[in-house]
Image 1 (tube, rainbow, N blue to C red):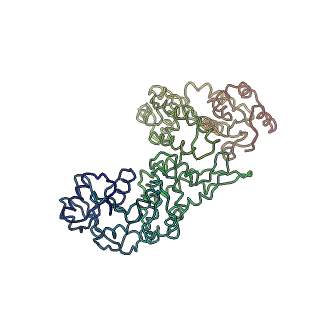
Image 2 (tube, rainbow, N blue to C red):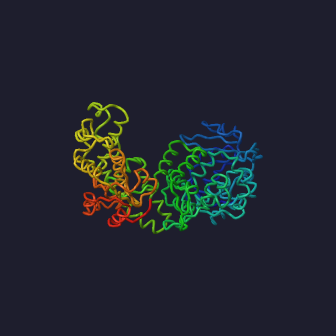
Image 3 (cartoon, rainbow, N blue to C red):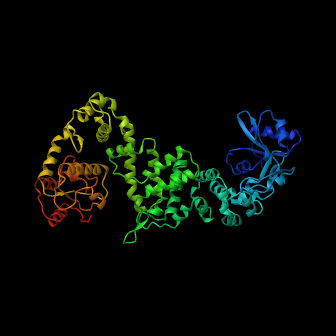
Length: 583
């Protein structure tokens, strides 16, 4: 053993070594703290190995904890700091694939180092001797290599978790895994079933929070995901033929993991957010991939995964909430962002934005070019809403349930609907969040419609005009956008309620509307176009283009159009600029 470069020990760790050596025993710091010190990382723990037996360690120190006497480990307390001191040992058989059935205390440091997992972790240090490296750990640090001590198959048979640790160290340090060590993992990977889910979870977390979370791919390459997360292997075999994607589902996931901030909920969301694409995948007639409803299916799989690996409820709930909304996209108007903020929650929204930005990094340039302007406007609207203190939830309304009861409302579901309508109003116009305005407009004394509830005073004239148009018309043509904003959806819903309540015998023609949404209205060619209660009703095809509602063609059609046949409706749809698509 030749002296090498000095390592600066924490004063209390140095004091423990000195106490043991002065009593006639050998003592070294060992393992990860030596490795990290040599490559310029700050060690998390300083473990100590010694020739002293556990009972001798306990006699030398005033405050000790019997951490694992059967394995030779005593925790020495120095102030509030704890240092594990373990006697030199060799291990017996590992029948459970994780812990030795027995240990044998020895007097040789060399025997102790030989039982350790990887060469870079099998080095010891003391100021008197310098670094003790019997297995080439210094060379492997230089070569940036993870290599097992001795026969890798023996090391992995002793402790199956070492296979996962090899990939985790690779990700944390940015090292390669030595070829024989890597090749020994695949045939032995099924032994990971013997390891507790909690220990596997801890290794997954460390890998995810490393500088190279995308090294998760190595788990698939060496067969580990086939044991702990078979869905990832299925994701590797799931392509995404679309102008918005460049990679299969797994490699998109790896890109997102790398781009996501190094926070556990965000990295877990990155790993799990598209797991539902495997069962959701469908092909269109042109060979393009679609993954309708994958967010819901991803949340179902994620819930099972998080439960299996014993994640705490707080982490699991947060990750699941984020997965369910990760793909939500809206036209970034202030009212839309207020509604989305209220829906997602103030606590989750910053991570929703951060994850959205990470998600697009794993997509095509087409997708990024489309997304980035929308993202920037959404973030700007969010910051503006925060600065203004705009209300976004029912709890932030100036009117509470008690105020409605005091005004004469009866407790029950109807009162909840009134509060929702109030929120809907103030999310659109925050200055309306006053008790006087909200009670006057939506309280028990406000005008009401059986389909819509309270009608704001400023909307009464438009409301009556809409009813008159609906009742007098033969045909209703409902504009529709393939990508409507939230205002558009809300206008659709209001119009649907009006039609079903006031003219159930009439029906709607809606070019381009999906069949499942079209069926919410009364089908067959015979109702009318309504300009109306809410101007957005005429913006539906135009999406977020509000100027459509002021187009004179809409107003003229709403006032005068009378059609009796499908041909004329199609001609009118073409005149208005709609693309003909059969529902």
